[in-house]
Image (cartoon, rainbow, N blue to C red; front, side):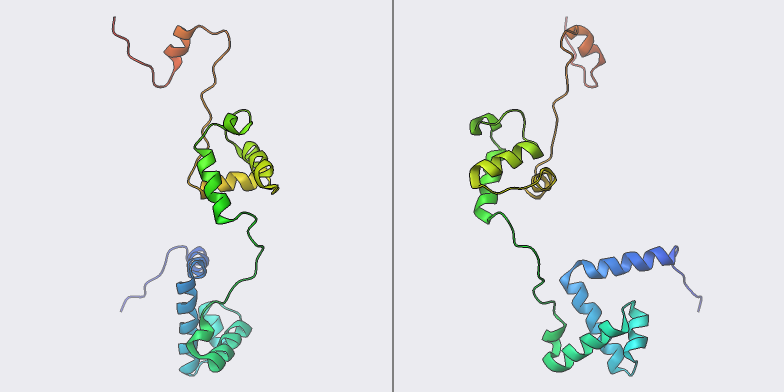
Length: 170
């Protein structure tokens, strides 16, 4: 049988490992494969080498599997910083973003800085501009700046250079 190879194997190994770590189900399946290899007689070092994990990590999974069964291979709660905004506040932000910022005493368009001020005024929660920009994407919005106009330019010449020029009937 012909030996098959994967093009750019080093990069693909890293990409596959990232994909495995991406979802809870994939991580669980990955740990199951490690248990299968150990159950078939491989050492934790050999199983770890085959799967791209540290031997100590595989040993940790084996101990959890021995003590807790299949439930020991499931991801537990991961510690992390608590959310600064509640679900109700996020819903209120989503509603507010559909309105003009002037309705809330703010100037300009909705952007990271404006949203940060809005959140600070409404709930006394301080979020940075970059975090507010992420919040736009999280809520399904995207930032669009209006096309700038030159103050004293000829409107006919501006229309001539527009990408989507209007066709006028004469």
